[in-house]
Each structure stands twice: as C-alpha cells, then as structure tokens.
Length: 147
Image (cartoon, rainbow, N blue to C red; front, side, top):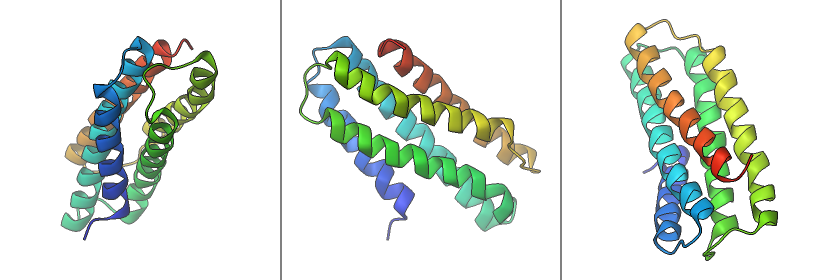
C-alpha cells in the first residue's frame, strides 16, 4: 500500500505530464515542467528520509520537519494541477492566483533548509540536494509566472 506522500506525488506527476502535453503557453509549459521537477525531487527527499528512518540513520525529530514540508509541496502540487487542468494558456488572473502558492512553498522549503538538523552527513547531503532541486524549480516557476 502506498503512503500518502507517495500517492500525492503520483497524482502530481500524472497531472503535470498530462497538462504539459497540451500547453501552448510558455508560462504554463514552464509551470508544468517545473512541477514535474518539484514532484520528482519531493519524492526523492521523501524516500531518502523514510529509508534513513527505517535504517536508523535519522531520528523522528530530524525527519519530522522535512516530511512536513514534503507533504505541503505534494498538496500544493495537487492544488496547482487542479487549477491548470485542461488549460492551454494561463491568464494573468490565474498566474496571480498560483504565484502565492509557489512563493509560500519556496519560503517553506527555504526555512526547512535553513533549519535542517540531520546528524548523518550522507542523509543530510541527500536531503539538501533534493530540497535544493525543489528550490531551483520553484524559482524558475516564479520567474516564468512573472514574479
């Protein structure tokens, strides 16, 4: 059985790929591609944290803030996918409605990176790499939407 973050990730990936196929608008294309990158990195960090916890190389207290932000990212991905479902272009109003969600996610990920407290160096490096990928994709989306 799949965990909730994995299901959210799967929904986000499928929706982003479907929407990306029919995009004629550069902002919508950038949003779709960026959300695929966000989803993939989010899945990677979730898998890393869960595996590290199961192996005993990460405590629950170290994992909790990371898993909280990954859940927020996955839920926002579903919300964004619902917003852009069936669109071939983003209107200025739609860009304006999506941008705060992207900025909130970026702030949450940045805060998690700044306060990351993982004692195992290998796990910390893997988690930081995925979170940095998420930050980069969110920054790219922000620019594409006309921050």
